Length: 287
Image (cartoon, rainbow, N blue to C red; front, side, top):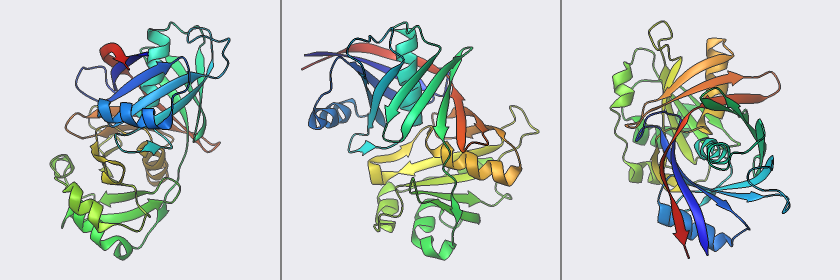
């Protein structure tokens, strides 16, 4: 069996920035065991598998596909950067003729539309709720040490814990934050948390005008730090839209690779997440 594979950096237009994802367009479904093994072999934060919904469709003519995402250790319910990368593969390499693609996923239908040099993803919005920091004392300590924390929120749906640093903190504090992923993993074993989002208010008056910054740590799903995370921004976008009173937001995930996301919180409980991709590798998996 030969499976085409692409590696794209998402939420960037520069190689070796953004978040790398592997994408495999498949002629037929594979076993879950094989999906896990391929994802472990690719060893990226996500490997995406695209299959046709209708056998009479091709990757060029079809507009609706099934999409699944796997980390090196587990399947996940929602992934932004690998969805962006999957759409880019179909549009750029399969020359898909449709203006919008629909992916059927564990998080429902996700639409991706071409926009100038990039793509717009139509994702569910995942609002978090405010928490008592004492309920997550050990996890907060493992994530940010003694840095001043302004608020703590949790999205029960995605199990993402949002830790907002005090506005008095400089951006460099977040950029240089070093998190021990083993200590973080050991701080929370109840199953309430699957990722920690450390975030802070941006400076929209200074170019390029980021409304907020963030980093994402997810050792619970085998990812010590995810470079740029679309799914996290379904939570972050909801939180910061409410706090800043804005529907359109420019976000920067300040990992070592870094990536930029354009967000638009909609009134229908959805969020548009826009970004670019660049292809790094194209090849064949031989089994």
